[in-house]
Image 1 (cartoon, rainbow over the protein chains, first blue to last red):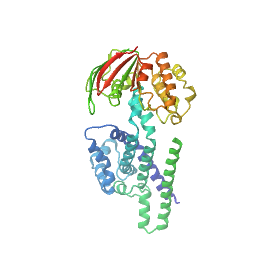
Image 2 (cartoon, rainbow over the protein chains, first blue to last red):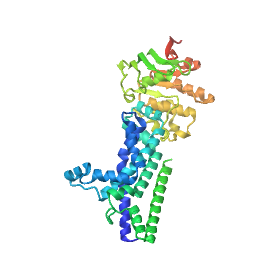
Image 3 (cartoon, each protein chain N blue to C red):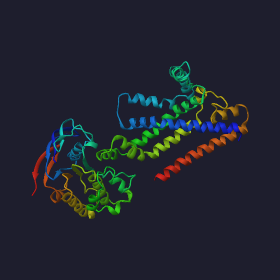
Image 4 (tube, rainbow over the protein chains, first blue to last red):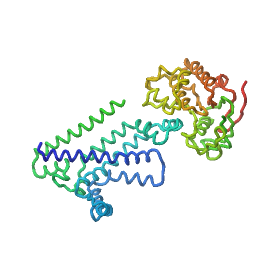
Length: 221
Length: 205
């Protein structure tokens, strides 16, 4: 593989890993709130969270572009306050990945939390455990399988992200071109052999991700 | 140490639980047919359910609005609710307030400590669940049909363990059952519950 291809692979893995990591705290919190509590506006939040799953990724990308651009409400504020630019940088790649992966993690984790016997959490409370302790010692360990599957799904979705990324991060070689975008570029240029090599890399990543997750789960049981 | 339910009301289906009970004996049986509301009374005392109205007192303090973790109640539910991902030792010491030596001794649990929960028999599970509640040094012990789900052949042994616990570890106990023989073997007083109401409370000889 050429150095440009290594750079693409590195960028893709780094941004996908970072995106997956960043959605863990809010994703698990949201999943837990949806699984264990009833609150006003819950169904609205549920719908909003699921939206990126059903909307065309390009449309989500356009929304993010409007929101995060220098003239957008959030992007403008970040630029003025911190001198931070999001759009057309690697940060936009991460944001696009996060938005697209978040619903997958929330869904998987929510189902996993719902399957944990609430009785066990109640008994832990009568034994003196705080809500935080109950979550980390009972709920999360017993939901580990589903949560791990959700993380895998989220990571895979991040690696494969295309539609939202190309709008909000562009397709800038050496800066925002990820694996998926690179494959698209190569096919457009008729460099099919190169495209197939990157395809092979994608398959390897997918294989490794599934294998590592399975190994982790095998060790737990 | 006594447990008092004062005009505690909680709608259930198909009746409404409405009770005033003063549990002041060392061991009180809460006796009645299935579906009379016995388990609900235990859950109210443990704080896992809130009454619609009325008050619950433990040792003179009003705990009606106190969360379960602050009530110091040792609740052993009918289904044991052992934590399946932990060893026996981790289960027992989950909420321990002492080294558990006397409890482990009385219930003869030492040989089980390293085992996984899935490797336990029905009777062993009961003992572990009982130990887990006892090592938190509860002010009151709530036992929900501790002999249900235990093989008939093992019942006498578990009953002996219960007798040892109730005599050697002086903790006021509320014992839910619908078996009269257990009441006779273990309890000083009996409260009979039917369809959410106390129909009789009496001292046993």
